[in-house]
Image (cartoon, rainbow, N blue to C red; front, side, top):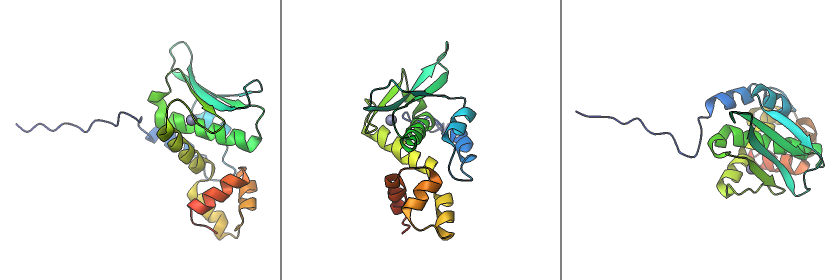
Length: 171
Ligand SMILES: [Zn+2]
């Protein structure tokens, strides 16, 4: 008898669909409301003025059963930076939930003890959360050709807008 084994899920990643679907529902207009995404996912977001300057933020499990999540962002950082941090932590939630454990703390360069691959994935997905390709292309086709206007429209840093437009081969 020929037994077929179901392909086992990747040990590194949780299933993406539910979180990604919820996130995409908030990507129809700019700027993307990362706080609303967190709320829709049941994730509490705390802005903490006491975090050291070299910590961008963190995501941790909370609650008696450890089944809820909290994102903390550095209250001393600029709002565009905070938005990126929230998107980065949302990416950890969407992509790396099983690895969060007792928490992932990201330093100023979005490095964590979880390793470079995980952090690169979170940064990359964070960029797509804040600047979804279809929406960026729509604005670009509508005449928004410069990254300064893109940055303002998407409420991200100039640097991020520039990198994202380059990634999407715009401009
Ligand atoms: Zn991270």
